[in-house]
Length: 240
Image (cartoon, rainbow, N blue to C red; front, side):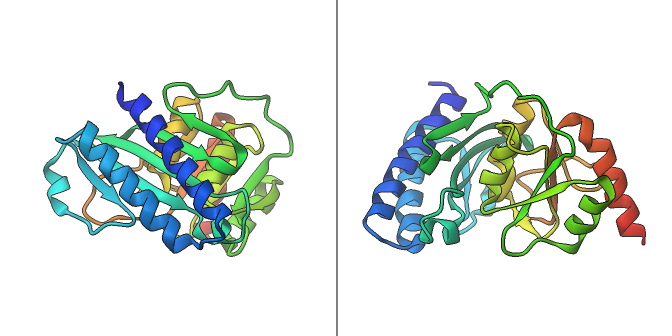
């Protein structure tokens, strides 16, 4: 089984478990715990020599000496999961030498999993562009950039759901400046890059994974043709 096949298989298995937990009216805490246990068990059995960084486990900094590190979020969008919404996800990614090399994002309530080894063909982009922002705490920068480029704002839950909405052709831009962690975006970035999208920090620099600090303050995933206009607008807003 290839790394990508393993990522997809684990994401789908964890998604099936989470759907069962959700149907039992359990909250996100149980979902986080049980999905994390499943994912860790599978990865340790299938890739015992690789390191793992998971949102739901203590960080073992011995990962810093490893080339291959699995970066996982067992339940991205705990609030949306508890509210029985569709916009939550499971993230399974493999970073190799700091780059998001392999990824799978399961959207269990939508019945689909997107992976870096079989990304969908991008649908035609729409004008004006649709920009995905947090449904509960959209930043002022997102509002300002959206106004500058004439974007339509769409609120959505988890980072994975937003990133995959761009991959699936439901939006053109996902801009985030409110702070994230490596597990929030490694799998989505791997899938987005494989699909031919742009993915970077909001200053245009590449995102580096398996760094000691787990935080990644900002993120841009968008159609390639929108990367320069968005980055230019971000720079202008940050100067003002």
